[in-house]
Image 1 (cartoon, rainbow, N blue to C red):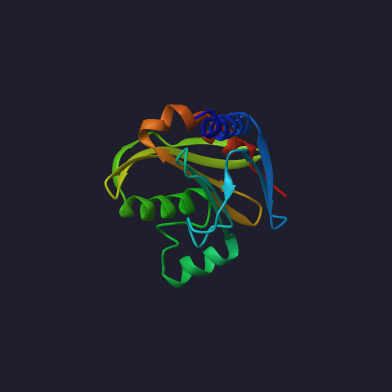
Image 2 (cartoon, one colour; image 1 turned 90 degrees about the vertical axis):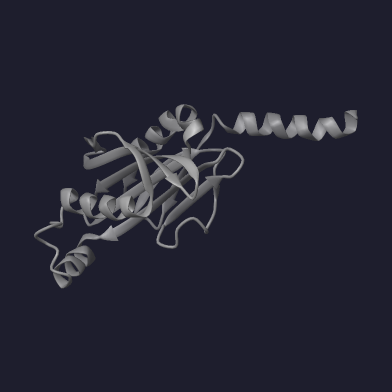
Length: 178
């Protein structure tokens, strides 16, 4: 019994120590973000994401999607949506959140917070929803950079919201455009 317990103890200590560490991730010379050390890179969360990290055991996930402002302008013009969704942070965030809210069963949305991160304007929301029968908490930020808009979406199970909410906020506020 002692032989089987030792690997679990070592693994538990390793995961526990790893949780306090952070890792800075740089993506395509565009941006950098600090993530918890317990997250691992993946590629199956969202096909449009330029960054995807997760910890299945902790049920903690984060993705970052970026869109060029010039491409958004073309798409909005082509679909005659510029009057509804201007090509600025206000319009882009409304467009993204309107689409996001159509895909999930919203239970609660906190007021949108306007702030700045490293000089860039940001809007973020905290959202509780039911997705495929699961209660999920999202921390969703949209940042306007020089040439791009960035979506940072972190999520976990609602029961773990208090445990990870501050960690999600730290990740978002660590974001830097390069």
